[in-house]
Length: 137
Image 1 (cartoon, helix red, strand yellow):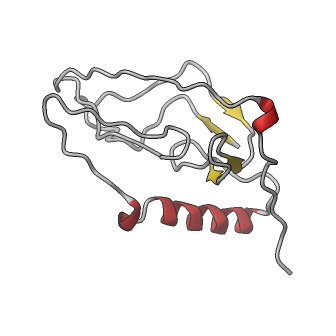
Image 2 (image 1 turned 90 degrees about the vertical axis):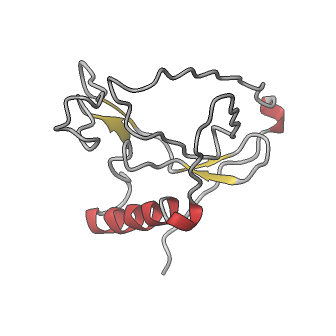
């Protein structure tokens, strides 16, 4: 289950100069943890510390252990790339396959300009079966 409550306070919640997203009402959705990449067919993990609340099919200790392991892998310093921005930089990534973030956006900070380009998704005939998992033992 993924979603957010009415705010995401983990980002410098007590600093009045940091912009924090606030929502009028909580929104939740359930979606598989594993997806397939429509171009490569590789398995993608759909989890993040900010949005993933639980794995609904597992008992609480199992889901906590699984999410702890997935988050440890995702946020391991060996798997991180931090770009030092300079004027004129262009950075491109596969939005499906890469988790991305930014530092806190300060109310008195520099202006940000973002551009998104979407490539067409392959036709349904090209789709690969969703990955499935089973409990060991």
